[in-house]
Image (cartoon, rainbow, N blue to C red; front, side, top):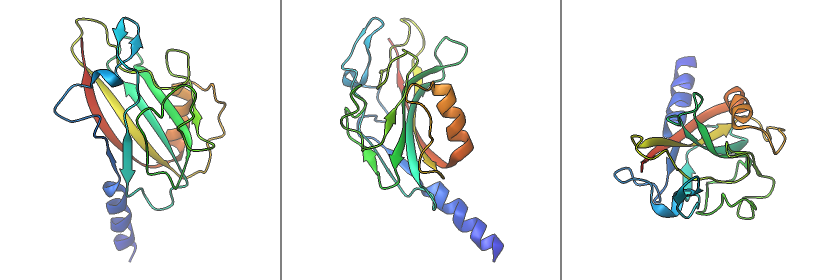
Length: 176
């Protein structure tokens, strides 16, 4: 009986999926989703994301975009959103606007490594190999993280790890 319950739980976590038509697996991140700053001239529009089959017990979600290849020694947080309601099944393109107007009520958009809120698209140094941009939806066991809106990506990441039931990712690439 216990083994059957453990198998069911593992299967439901494995079913958790993140999708985005804006981040095709076989193409670099498109200009509308690239940064507009730091020498890049993209549209700085967050991609549309949708998810399904979160783990049982999910009480909220968070979405992050992270570049583990940034030449900082600690990567680069491009987008940090938390306290998304458990009823959410995605975010529309542009939801990462600094105003947060397209986010569900109560959602918090925290600081990126640019020091500002909202999505900041890819802009790796010229000549670097294409960087990986890991978009992740985190299913959480708590309704709210109760963190300040100006929390760093690292602080939010710590809280996500402590409260995560499951996660689903898409890894996209961009270089210049």
